[in-house]
Image (cartoon, rainbow, N blue to C red; front, side, top):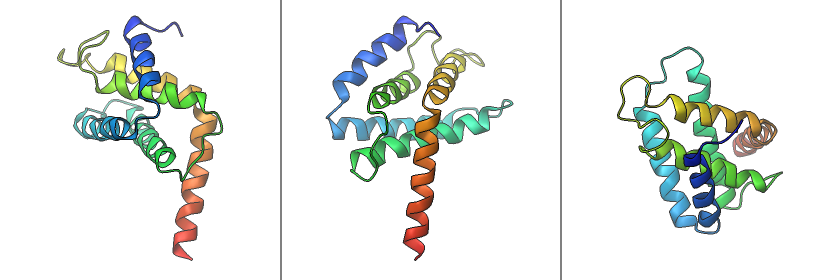
Length: 135
């Protein structure tokens, strides 16, 4: 996928965010808010919504030191996807009814696909952590 200039800008911003936990925490907060407000009713978007929330949990778990990325380079891509999603001014501004979030969700789907192995590993880690908490 050829990235658009807004996503390239988000990648640049994500690179600068690395190592700034307070700013990353704020980004995750904004991500969670926008996910809760977005219209995910279209076919197939419910899964993407869950994966987007999982990305937020993954980044948060890595910030707290609980989870280590198998591929540290993915952190920048995931941060960039979050930045792109929460930014209302991108390739297709979010204020445009019905299509405003389409580009955001396309970027999210692309990054989720790229990070699928990491997300599966994180899912296993979360499940193991939950089981350990029960014991």
